Amino acid sequence: MSLLKNITDEMYLSMKSGDKEKANALRTLISKLKDQQIKLRKDISDEETLKIIKTLVKQRRESAEIYSKAGREELAEKENFEISILDNYLPKLMSDEDVLSLIKKIVDETNAKDLSDIGKVMPLVMQRGKGKVDGKIANRILRSLLE
Image 1 (cartoon, rainbow, N blue to C red):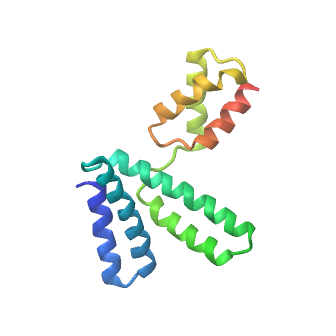
Image 2 (tube, rainbow, N blue to C red):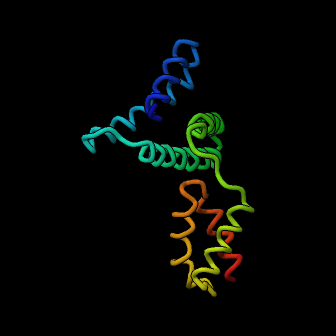
């Protein structure tokens, strides 16, 4: 069963159970996914679906941060709630220790010596992490290793 089908089914369950906030968050996600299908003129794969979900989570995090800085906590809480719903569909991120071991392995393979080598290490980290590596955390760890 495709990820889009799972999301749609869960939206209907939320609607039936009266969970309006969750249903609205899932409705927004489905809308984005269907927009992408129309744009591509084909069904989207689970990988493309995950990419869209990651983008939405990133946008929500940025919005929540802006709302918090502006003192609009009720809007920040709404964004954080939507993040918690969207996070359920993303693969679990690797722990910092796992990211560190992956980065060390790639640094050894590429013979990276200093910060100028970040450009050749980071793409490999993200590729081998297969969506389970947070880029900001990986970059921070890599910088600490190469400094």
